[in-house]
Each structure stands twice: as structure tokens, then as C-alpha cells.
Length: 305
Image (tube, rainbow, N blue to C red; front, side, top):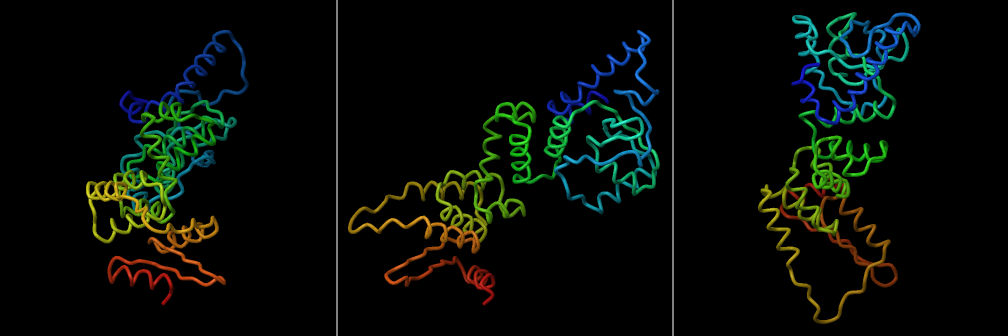
């Protein structure tokens, strides 16, 4: 693997792959000492040609969606020029391998009708396989912020990493890691909006500073309806946080956990701030504010009106 490619993979992934060099050195020492290790098989650390039928996919691969048009284009390129960049696998036995990285290239090679493919053979345990798959996924150019956050969260939970350790693995500072992970605390409606590209990471970072989910959803709707820039969103958040709390007169009774939960669920469903008022004998009202006629139409459509 060239120096440029190793750098492109990131420090975390290249560091995880380095263990193969020590394994390869040990294998060479065994040969020098006439130590037999069974039948001759493809060597670790070098480029080998192996059958596509002998490679199974990585069970730890977090990526499930592959653009079919892009795969077809890559397959056409492979038909003309061959596979220029080898994939990376680990050996399970003499004639069985498991993919570490390069599933897109593997799929395209199958589409191109190849029977053999160039591979790097590495040594890796299940923990390293998971880390490599997650790190490779993080280095895709078209990831949205929620996909990044979910991959980071998986590395913390499944690889037992602390945030500073995770930062070292993926070449991000701790504050960046923290900001991504905080996105997962936003209401589902806002997370979906980030996934779909309706709002940016900058908008989301401004929304994160608000503790109340209903206020987050209310401002989020303003962003969508009015096309607010990140700067305008930050100004709106600051104005909301600076707004004085009225203390004159009779203060409303604190709402129960059950009522708050219903309000939050409705706010998430309608992507709008919802207020639930319950009076005596179980009677009450539900208030769903809207920002424009089109916003009202959106809410009515959700209600199947």
C-alpha cells in the first residue's frame, strides 16, 4: 500500500493494519528457522490474487446502502482497466477470507464479472475488524452528520472506547466527537432533517444548546419554513435564551411527567411546538401552532384531514 493511500485511510485505520507487518515478520522468521506452519498459502502483508468466491463480506460492516448507479460505473471502469486498488481481507483458513475494507470495490468487481481479485491479506481479530469497518465508514465523503454520530456511538459502545481514545482512532479532537454524539440527543424529527439535508451541522449545533425539545422543534420549523442561515439560527437561539421569564401574577402549575411525555411525542410527530392543557374532570385542549398556510397544510396532512 502506498504512503499516500495509507494517509488517506487515516491514522486510526492504518495503525490497526500495521499489526500485519509484525505477523509477516514472525512468519518469515519461522521459515528461516525451518519451522513448518502447514500448507503454503498466500502470504500476509503482500498483494495476492484470490478467487472472489473465497471472500465473504464483513459481518461488522455498518454500511448497508450502496448507490447502484455508482457501482455500475465502477464496474465499467474495472472492466476496462481492472481493479487498480486492492481490497483488504483477513484469512479464515487456507481457502476462505473475510473482507476488512473495500466492499464497494468487491461488489463492483462481481458486477464486472471478475473471478479473481487483488487483495492485501492482514491479520485482525473481531475487535479490530469492527474498528476497521467503522473507521472506513467514517471516511466516506458523503456521510451525513447523523451517520457519523451513529458510527462514533457504535465505536464507544462496541469497542469500549472513551471519547478521547475514539478521537485518536478517527483523527478528530474530543470536542468534535462530543458535538457529533450530542446530535443523537436531538428529537427524531430533527435527526431526520439532518439526514435528509434540510438543515446542516451548523444549524444542529445551535439547536443542541437548547435544553427544551419542544423549543428545539419550534426553532427547527422556523429554519425549514423561513430558510434561516446558521447565523440567523444562532441569533434566534440567543434571543430565546435571553428572553426574560415573567414572574408576575399566578404561576402555572408544573405539568406532570405523563403530560410532558405526551407533549414531547406530539411535538416530534408534528415537528412543531405542542401545548397540552388538562383541566378538571379530564377535559382539556391541544394547541399546535403553525407558521404559515403551508405549515398548516403540512400539519393537516399528518392528521390525515
